[in-house]
Image 1 (tube, rainbow, N blue to C red):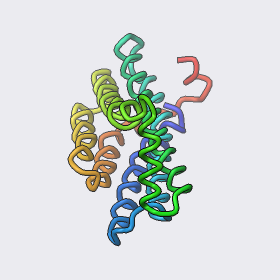
Image 2 (cartoon, helix red, strand yellow):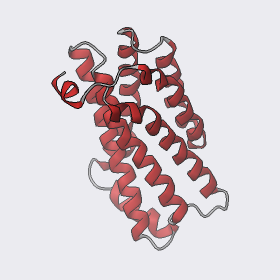
Image 3 (cartoon, rainbow, N blue to C red):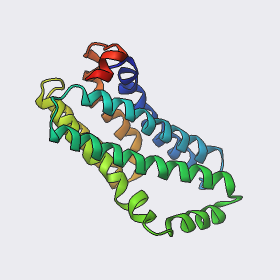
Length: 195
């Protein structure tokens, strides 16, 4: 794994946990969005998602080449792309909105565009969660993660489906599940690109 991927092993899940904490704090006063609390939460979430990109590419290098690896990586990256668009849209809409009513209106306008609701909100982000668990299972099968990591990662990605209030716990479980990847040796960037 590259040093960037090794950094992302810790930073990506912690940023996602930070998103959850900022979101919880922002909702305490019943005035969440648009504003500082909304933007802080969403910038942390966006950072976490962006950090998962080098992590996924680093995990790819730990699995033997083959269709299963490429499908898992492609599905994960597609889900990340949808999630990144979602968080980016939320940030821009909150920047443009004067209040929650206008934010809801802007969100409705965007999600009402053909295909956006399904691709960016309903189904697209699910591919990230399915893909990262499948990729972790492949890495575990290759002997580079313990057997319990994919199971813990599955629990982590299911928690926000219950309620987004569990996102801090989800991020911490992701961290624990992926932390064994830090023991992988750092590969020089040129060697990582060649693989």
